[in-house]
Length: 296
Image 1 (cartoon, rainbow, N blue to C red):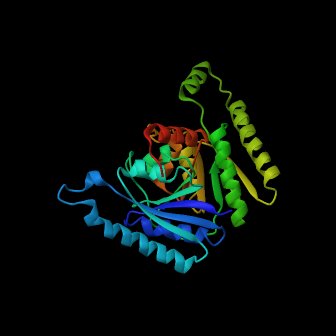
Image 2 (cartoon, rainbow, N blue to C red):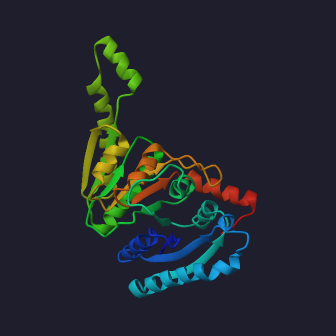
Image 3 (cartoon, rainbow, N blue to C red):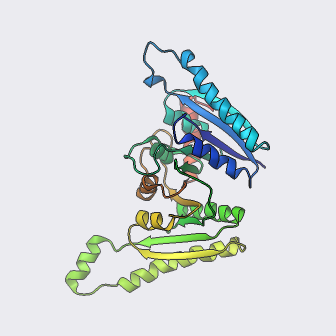
């Protein structure tokens, strides 16, 4: 069965790398691809109509479709021009997709609240954000883990990617002692550092054990490190093929909040970043679509 991908293009410097990433994926996956773009009506001067700018958007999509047909002829391609608020329209377009791919204008650095953060907070399928300077590599698949359901879904996604590509899976768990507790232990003259570290080591060991049982052909390397999860993952992913994290998206209308680790990775962009949402997000978006009467 073909994997359904929505690739959002805007004609900016981030779009070519995102298109390259999808074409590279087509070498190892059977894909059905929708190329989409959004005419942001709110940003058009009142003297300019959407019909006046439409040909430029259509030409951009046609050029991208021709590139796909040339370099990945087995991929089924369709194009769509959407009109409205980009975040809303892109979340609608991805509601029934297996994967959404976007590019970013910067290789690194951004402010909170950018479109990619807003999409990552509300998307209902895994979102791949590709940095402008991306080129294919043979790096590992890196996944950040914690002890929750969304983290488990991120691990499942990362393990399938490692299996598909024949790459090492690097399972990373970062931990820190809460500041308030640390201050309390200092005043008491004792710290159960080893006990807390062992508890986190057990979380990591449980994840690794499950991956090895479910994906026996995948080589797994585990990393337990004290420190900020975003910093630890950014360092681990410096030469990676992908870095994968889970997040608790809050749906299409209210999804403006993003977990701090995913947020920081989307700023540092050490490599393509995959944000895997909680499965409840898809049910919420479909409910919102019924309420608002919107469709794909």
